[in-house]
Image (cartoon, rainbow, N blue to C red):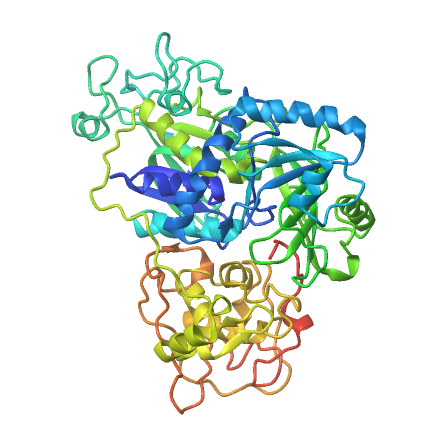
Length: 622
């Protein structure tokens, strides 16, 4: 039995897990994909918004403002890439200035940091690459850019370091409510004359944008011992029967939890129905992006927005923290929650819009394209509340833009909802908010690189030439739990450069096999169903001894892609890479259940062309 089960390990679920890891609670984070942040969170603009796009009456705006202010501290603690570059909204016609005045006043009312209206000359001073037709604009210096997947990875790694258990491949297909609930607590959230903890966080009661009905904060009761632990007094003065939820995965695994947080992203509506809670609809809203090479002449210093429309913030030009440039996204409602296909017909639309902002943007600089799906709800706001039908459930749904910005505040908000509903929390005495920094070779000068190579010769072997990623960095990513090509790419940037893995993919596959023992036939791009190899051409190779890392902290031993329990935890610092002596590196053996050499693309050498092993190149900005 755990205290809290969080369904969904995107940035919202990850933020909740990280906040709860500071308390003496047993918390499990459940993710249906092979790795965390493999859904909505990976195909993201990576913008920390400035707090002026939406009215302050919305919950999402209040959490956006609060979340924005939390990124500096999180950046120091978790060491993910983040910069406050500022955001510009460029008006290209005089009639757009009225809309800008409205956004400006809205930002002032919301408390947006340092927001200002700008003349044409001021806009060109702030961003010389803007189109010369710009007539004025808005500047929000508090806006910024972040690498979304490394941010999400760092949240989960920190949570696991402090005791949260991560279970991947856990797709919830059934939920059973156990107990009659007669021991419900007496601290109802939103009762007359009271203020919920979450409302207190935001500085007010009514008007927070979330309606929590009477009695929705009820806590599952239990016997006297359980009540003492959970801090609950049964309503009727008797012990009552403890209520908890049993979650069943598609593969048969089960988790029993006193409290459940539904952070299921695109599938939050389906999870809610499985749990017997509220009925609502999540509509996938597709956004297509193009990623431009670091050498593009169209790279702006700041994020550039057009004047927004009713349903979209428009096509943006976004510098990324790693030096590439994103253009997009589109905003098209679709029916299929797995439809992340891109289309050539959108290319002209996206680039025509981008060139109206930054004329030096060029199609010839494109290195890949991808699409993401935003979980939109009808009213456009976040839905974060204690369920009125299942009082031990907190709903975290409809988290589209500015969900990434708001995510740190979402974690705090959910914590306060749980506390207000009766979940007793005691702060840990030894919570450690910091992750140890992993050195990145691309950030080092020649003297620093020499020192890294002296400490670990793995830093002397470059695997990804485009992004200057060493073998040591890739091994470090694998050792904290990233066992797919996409997971390694997002964690280390190996395969994220101009050639999109054409040079380094075969070596990354070898390193995954060496570190985990996964046979070639089961190495995948992003989990089951995306395996890279179909079989062997040529005679089988002789097996050689396996070289998997024994008992590395932070990784469960066994088959990582099978969806077993794993921790993405404390072993942040890479160890010295094996094979550093005069003897050439040994290739890992395949599973004993495989034919010798089965699953390699070429005879004996495991080398393959990029088209044979990389498959699609989209899926996230790099």
